[in-house]
Image 1: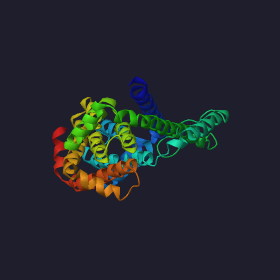
Image 2: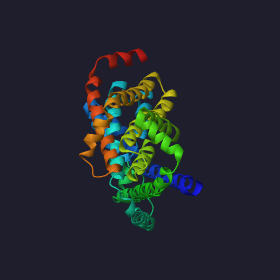
Image 3: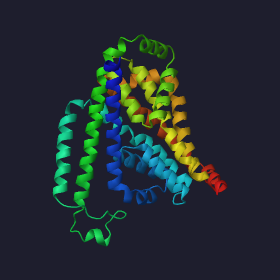
Image 4: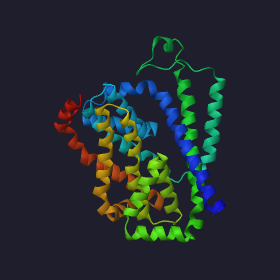
Length: 335
């Protein structure tokens, strides 16, 4: 039990979370000075906010980071609550890039990518110290005086981000080794049987585990790994994925607790979007599985496609609601 299941799961999970955090931190450190300015400039309408949230989340590989930043900006009075609604919708779409990349089954090239990115990172140190960080979308006078060496910052943090992604791939590959052992366990077989009776079990499990580990990508990756080895059916993997989208709201709610009333509105709008999407899709999980099956060749890719369809459709359905005048009245009452 310990060597066949617990140790591989713990090792793979730790590698996955460390890789995600390394990737997220590296990209945020590189783009951090620009984030606030981007959000201020490109969120004037819900559609523009959706596109901005999608791009930033895909670039930083963290929907939670963009949501928390949006809550902080609203709490500080930099952004208005209605302007963040599109951003929240966009974060759900942008986060699909992670699962789509995982769905490509690139585990075999994890080690070569790690060696190559580590080599580039070490070489960047031989090139000299980093120039001062850029301010906004351009460079301040101090940074500009460094002869355009801002490329070195991008290379160093970019190689760290790629190294983080390689650790994500390695973590997934390790977690996939537990499939045969899980299939032989009676308790796990019982859970799979119960989930086949009602997929609500899978949604609740995905939400609970994601709330505990604060990473929907990690939980979805584990579901994809189990489905790839045949340990769970694709339908259960999709249900866990939908639940993970609900569980990821916990971090935003925690961030909203220490914010203003408008900031709490942002956090709860995130909750309403994901819970509403789960309620909307729950009766149609089998349809979602069938549709994603037309777009994928294997179980892991099928779950990734399901995640993408779920988030895109959910965000597009909710987008017209962002234009309702009630949001402005709600913000006025919160002041």
